[in-house]
Image (cartoon, rainbow, N blue to C red):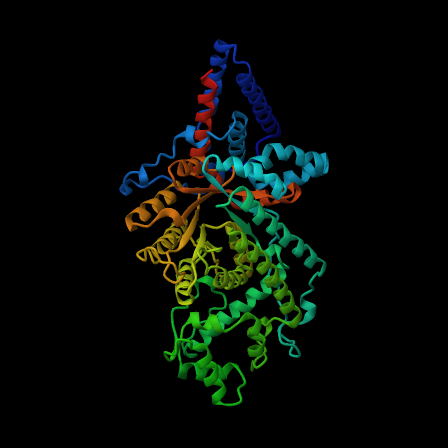
Length: 608
């Protein structure tokens, strides 16, 4: 019975067994004089650590996907051996090894992962917040996080540097995705945008956002002090009300829909209102006559000259057609009200426009972001903007592109965008941004991930009756991931020594715990003759040490993603991430890591 909850006695027995094992392990380490007895106990512990891991199918009900190279792909790239447990765990004490092994064992139990939020809340009620968090500090928080403040994390960052590993500082407290996006009624005609009553903004939240901006700035200073070649990660949802970002995203989606509508023949134009945002085809252009005939169907105009003027303003290439890139470069979020005010019908476009109150909040957000990036540029610290849930992601994309145009024109990219390749159409989005960087003359910097909101995004799409934005199969995501990295690696790869953003090679951080994907990147870089100085590899603190430390030992730029923040805010973050990535915790890569932890524990124990 894969999902059957174990009896309470069995759970208690398992916990008691784990505690007993911990006591035995501590005795084995401390009592070195009793060699003969230790060797006997060590063999017992070795047999325990060698137990086969639970079946992925039994725990999670999903098919297992190997992280190993396929048979026809040849030997590991660069001759790297990611299975050397001594290299992987040289930085860990024996206690840290055991804790890591025990965490992975626990995370392989499906019912614990599914109900860990409930268990956490029960513990808060019974034991209280302080005692619960102190237990979790030593059992979980210290394994995955570096501390609660920017100052606390500096010693751990410096320790990583002694092993050639950089840091990506991530303030892990984040806004929550509370479900449905804001929906405004469509009957109001007196005001451009949705009625004020539909959106209530908490202005005390502006003070919190200002405080978060200072926290992100402290993180940038900490990177400069403790890991000068590292990164700081920021979440834009912490710098404004997420409701505002949903409204911004709705506006940007309607701008994309408008381009589709004015580019297509009304007789054959299909409805894309329920299509995933990133999967919408944007590859076509619109000529002057088509633009004019369709524009006047949606907007009131005084005469043909106004339409001609609008077309000429958007057609920056002056080639007689408008591409999607030209469209998005010239239709500004802050100026959409001017267009919406002339709408013939008070439909989605009219309702999506931001009201004056929202525009002011938007400008406050922009001001905070510029203060953060201005400091980063001054100190030479690179900043990764995290991807978030789909309802606010278009707004994040819009802001990041604006920042890249300004801050990526120096001698290196300062701003890195995050691309979630489990989203349908993400590879095409990357190709558009690569083209933008060439058109506008800035350095392209990206972090490529598979994605972190798969379960919730599919459920929201099902509830709303729309197509899921998530790829249908693992193979689709894997192809999207590798195709995206391939395009970034190939970008301007033959323009050696270029000092301009327009012609420079792209930089990319490959955020993955998948050994097959890392070997793919190394192999493709070798085949393309690409210098690896602009290729970075990142894994979470507390996981995939066999990848991080093997890469760093062999001269590659390896990083640990280091979350930090108040434990009361970070633990819920860790719980959400654990539940979202439950299938990954049962993957062959994690099983391999758990096995390697056991091997290293046996090696250390048996040497006595």
